[in-house]
Amino acid sequence: MSLEKAFELIEKRKDVAIKDLAEFIAIASVSAKKEFLVEAAEFSAKLLKENGFETKIHETAGGPVVTGLMDVGAKRTLMFYDHADVQPAEPFELWDSPPFELSIREGRMYGRGTADNKDEIVCRIHAVRAWLDAGLELPCNIKFVIETEEESSSKNLTDYVEKDMDFFKNVDGCIWEFGGSNREGFQEFILGVKGILYVQLSVKQMTIDSHSASATHLPNAAERLMHAVNSLKDKQGRILIPEFYDDIEVITNEESEVINNYNFYPEEMKEHYGLEEFRFGMNNEEAKNAYFTKPTCNICGITAGYQGEGGKTVIPKEASVKIDFRLVKNQDPDKILKNLRKYFDDNGFTDVKVDWSNGYPPSKTYVNDDFVKLCQRANMRIYNHEAAVQSTSGGSGPMYLFGDHMPVVSLGCGHANTNAHAPNENINVADFIDGMKMIITVIDEFKNWK
Image 1 (tube, rainbow, N blue to C red):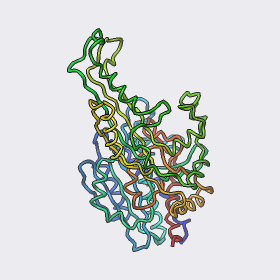
Image 2 (image 1 turned 90 degrees about the horizontal axis):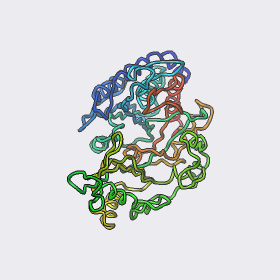
Image 3 (image 1 turned 180 degrees about the vertical axis):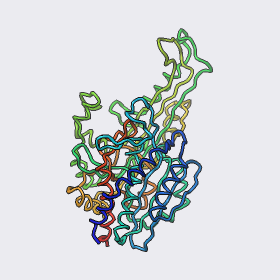
Image 4 (image 1 turned 45 degrees about the vertical axis):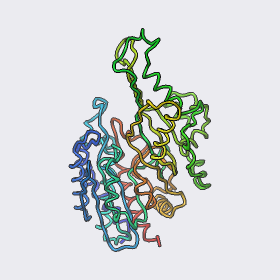
């Protein structure tokens, strides 16, 4: 039997796949609100079981984790990582159709989770089903890991993985949860993610706010906190925490070439954000290189004093700031957290409280890995071009839990304007169908992986 039979089945059954996606979208599994996570896990398990997988739902301290296994006794194993939770849909008034009802308009499917990441779950499971129903013999075992808290920092995924390490052994490659085509219509692979350390810094200097007439002699918590925050970086943005840069891995020549060849769309980016230039006067190449290779220290939000309408002359008793550090290969969030505390203490900011919110290490698969090459061959067969490659994403995710044990490639059926995390999230129906064919072709390439 050839792949054409499987492709025919995908086309023939696309309405069934879309119906499954519609049912999935109707489950408003917003992990930030801890809503309908069990229902999303149960639906994921149902899809897996109906399509031939041995399925388990693993309880955690938060949302469940679902695993699926199709063990055919093959030498190689392919894993998929996905998540069944979604971002909040607010503001609802900006949606052109209800966010938790799948709507199809002009060849696009709209709804919360259509691009991130319920589409990929349905796409990948239906691809395996089409392969089997075409009478083809699987050249690899297949595993699924579907969590329900990815949009809330995967808070309990680590505990699950540590308890079920055997499930992650002897996996030859993992396809991550997201991906698709870029602005030019070419597929993109993402081979890694930055790590993250997210903290809240806070200062409390008085028991109550005071009239600003007393600013001559009373302490200002906002001012104190700003001095502490300003001490973290120099004027060119270099982070001053001791040992912050010491462990960073030097990028390979192959990765450097991939970065050089990647289209960063710098002029479009500046136009989109209303900028004349990038920060610190970076040129376009410097900005691109920084995005892929440099860590960050970013202020996400500041709270202090009066924020209401009009004016209020006040000395704030307390102030807080939320900061995220994006980390690159070999940086350890625990070490940086420890050094951050020490840095404040050594520089006279013992009163600055540091509260850890979340964090995990970076992860990266190297561009010359055999699994990356396998995915490129499959991409060439489906899309008639090599995928553009991002050596790492500027964002973060729990990829290290997988990437420490196996190569990981993030690919999928999204496009450049999916509006993930925003109103009117969407994917193209045609991309959804091609995504299934891509997964089938990746599986087929395992036949040639000796």
